[in-house]
Amino acid sequence: MTGSTPVRGTKQPSGAILAGILEKLHSNLNSKMPVSFMPVSIQYQLAELYKPQRGTWRIQWYNLHPETGVLQRIQKTFGINRITCMKERKRVATEYILQLNAALKNGYNYFRDTEGVAGAAVDYVSLGKMIEQITAQRCIGKKKRTAESFNNYSNVFCNWLRTVDRYSLPPAVFTAAMYNEFIVFKHKQGSGNRNINDYTNYLKTVFKIAVKLSYINRNPIDGIDYLPVHESTRFTAFTTEELRKVSTHLMCTNIRFYIYTKFIALEFIRPYHLQYIRACDIDYEKDLIRLTPQSSKNNKVTFKQLLPDLKKFLLQYKFHELSGEYYIFGRKFEPSPTPWHRLSKDASQYWKKEIMEKVNIKKHMYSLKHTGSTYYVTENEFIDAAWLQHQMEHSSLEVTELYIQRRKTKKIDTERVKTVKY
Image 1 (tube, rainbow, N blue to C red):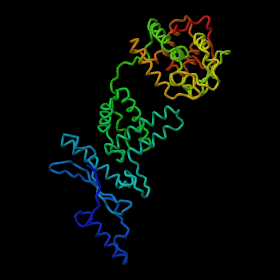
Image 2: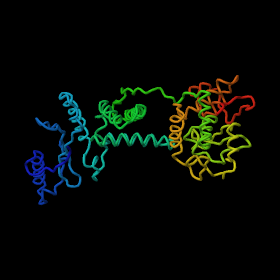
Image 3: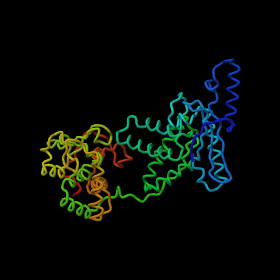
Image 4: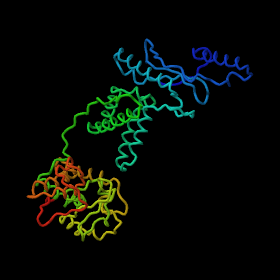
């Protein structure tokens, strides 16, 4: 399907052209230097469509190989043969050729920019390289987990570009139709609509930045629609009966995992952040939980009020006797001297197995956080929105819908205020 061959003898038109130019240079310089060692000024030959009556359509062009100094032919299909309509196939091939020729005139060299053969640096930036550069820029100053997500989106998409011979193309050649091919690819891999939408959302942002940086004139996937997703149960609150079933089951099967989930329901701490809480971060005298930049949503030190129901369990199971530097939840939800980075994934899998399958409650573990906040709002005569906003680590009215003002540390009267029975 693809390949490159040296131009030899007079069988290729470009060979005769090159030989003529070299001969002219040789005579003008009146040099005895062999022609094969003369400087070569031709760096490329423009792309054209090779369309046999039967067989595979190919786009071919010539580039000067940086190591051999010889013009070599490159043939690529760029996936155009998948298009069954001949008229549409020709239109797409023509668009490829126009963009590829523009790149050749701007210094693109297949051997140097795609195969990594050493050569003189140029300003040409390919589609894949552009996405990687913008991703690296977006990762600056981001939290580790956010940067990992950005890099994952970029790596998966760029690897797909390589498999379909599009990584080294000019950015302007990329179209919405090509992105739809990526959507089909992800779907065949078993990715759900929500996951595919995450890629779409990220890449829309990348191409938007590319427009601002003048890599391209327009966002090629701006008009791509998001795929429909089923209504999520992520924020669906548990009923009182469901909470009773969940707590009863977990107390009988895994008490430490039950305490893990109480942090979510009562303290509104996100599952991912629980892996970074150490024994020394819990002050049982002042009833405070200290969150470090790693364990807080806003990437800075903050405090949450330690509520009596959770405190009782922590004392009962002797969390207060742990070494201060121990992380309270590690592998298998046991205390650990080092953080267990699979903690939230293990917790999600355990919840799915024990609650969603065995107890048959089809709600996600994260719903405990929403249940706790909803219960506080609906079951109390008075609502301290500043406390709720601080406890949930929110910073705007749009997020909490109850925002009043931000305070460093605020407590509620635990004798008067009802919290969810879990």
